[in-house]
Image (cartoon, rainbow, N blue to C red; front, side, top):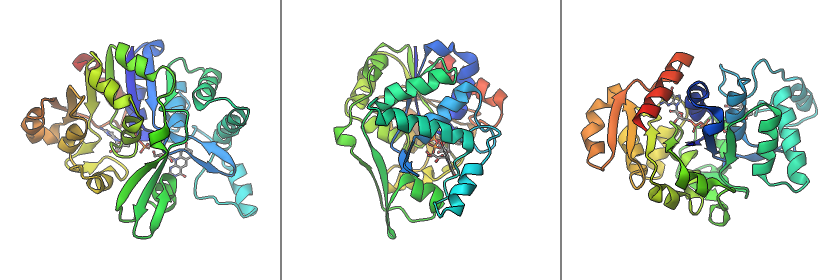
Length: 306
Ligand code: GDP
Ligand code: FO1
């Protein structure tokens, strides 16, 4: 069993590689849900959906989120009715949110609802939300507190970030099976996801971090940072706000209590000895994931390191 911790778009790039290199029934993918929010009365789980669509082979390869060849007819109609349109929900994507919302309202937990959606889309890997309870990332800025999607999409991550909080995290419980799968895993992979807002909330669910510290399985990460900058998105801006150094070293240090090895960019070769001083093996190589060939290659490198 390969247990994978992930956010959305960055993590899904490596997961696309695993799709072709690991038997899907051996994959357990634990997803961040602190980006989830309610819009148009619908429960939207961007990271769960990005991963599910990737494994189903229907993800939009250009945007990194949403469904390939989707249309936006409903969104346009919503706009004419005065609804908010800054979050681009496609027509096919909306079917997922409508189904999720209906099943949640019927009283099913998010983990069961996710299983239903995965089965319907032909996904055999286990895609598991980090918890069934509501946890919401709040970004504190001089302009006020914003939900993650408001900060990230609506305000284009332009605000100065003073702090980041995961509302509800103390009362969350790992979704059924998570702790057991970490303890029995052959290996655990931490995707090149945002360490603050994607991996941070998963590690914050009570019990998860301890399970990683205790597992006999090797725990391997891929850096989402190259030469002090993110490949995409605001990770390098958010890391200093929670006192992490914005570098591959900072990523390794944030995971130092459970991490065995980290793949870093060849360009960050000079950080190897500093990372190794933390007791973590550092392997420098190509970590850019901009083609299917690169995704498969990195997935293979991660597996051989495991
Ligand atoms: P989000 O939920 O959409 O923010 O997605 P994730 O948290 O899973 O991934 C975001 C992170 O992916 C960012 O910090 C990026 O730097 C990282 N990322 C994006 N593309 C690549 C890539 O090609 N290689 C690596 N190593 N990281 C990447
Ligand atoms: N990201 C954007 O930058 N703009 C969007 O309009 C947008 C819409 C969207 C719709 C469905 C979905 O599942 C994801 C969507 N994302 C969009 C991506 C997503 O919000 C972020 O990448 C993650 O939440 C960051 O973790």
